[in-house]
Amino acid sequence: MHEHAMAHNIIEQAKQQGKVKKITVECGALAHLPAKDMENVLKDHADFEVEVIETPAKVKCKCGFEGQPKIEAHSHDMNIFFCPKCGEVPEVLEGEDIVLKSVEVEE
Image (cartoon, rainbow, N blue to C red; front, side, top):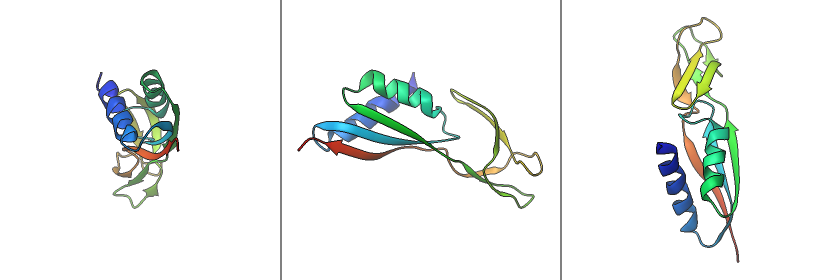
């Protein structure tokens, strides 16, 4: 149910800008909620247009690999990913955040 609290916080943050027409949210490929799920929750709670863009993840592995991980599974609160070079679990550098990127308001 924390996704509803997250959606509420994003919507409230957007409404502080004025009468909202549209928001754009970036959802990392390794965020604890998949982009499609985040989009559905936001659309259920918002009375304006919602766009959710999934941004790629970036990882760094002990083997020297730096780039996008191999994502085996991504669902609500669960990610299974590994280094595509050696198969180990790498350190996540980017792609875990859900961010309100832009807000369009009525004039």
